[in-house]
Image (cartoon, rainbow, N blue to C red):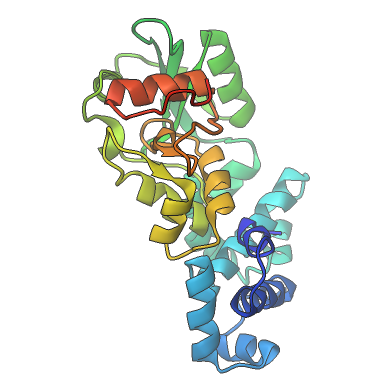
Length: 295
């Protein structure tokens, strides 16, 4: 099931139940993308009413959900060892052109390259020891299209090992000098200033994740938002948990500032790179953290 379907299952209302039924209808459609008329007929509503309700609950259109569903099927098929030609038809793409037009903006590389662990992609990366030592080491990796990964760890070996696991067949090259300007932008942000928010990104995302991550990039340094506030800003009042999952899946620390999202009581919740780093980043940006917040 795609992430949006898991989200709508968490809370019940007539509108949420409708969105769930539309999700199921889309996921059961195995050839191309269902039309609004077909989906409306499946749930017994007019296409326009069905679409408005669906978008109000999920924040994306039925077509965007269908594209994300097909892409997820494709990714699962190639991860299981299937070849790209078979996987694209199994996922419901009528042609390789349809797959490439849908997948390229979300995979950050060609579908064939993604299915082969990044084979054919050139990924340049840089490593930097963060000042004061509390953040450990920082890795920034980029393709020719933009930054594909920013991560923290206690050692360089952890960072390079994680990059290798994510892109095992990519041509990975360390070049600190080539990425010095991008790393400098991160350094400015680590000192509490503006920096990484404008970096070009080349990261994989579902339609929902992209909406959340784009919104997070608009949160000013020194401020925080709760998961519920982000959900409501996206017109998803019941979507706090889905927002939290999107934050946890963020591959680009700092550039997508998920550290600025906290619990409804202001306490620090999960952070992919550790709560001590989340606390440190917020402190450097001047955000107010309640006493007794999670360490």
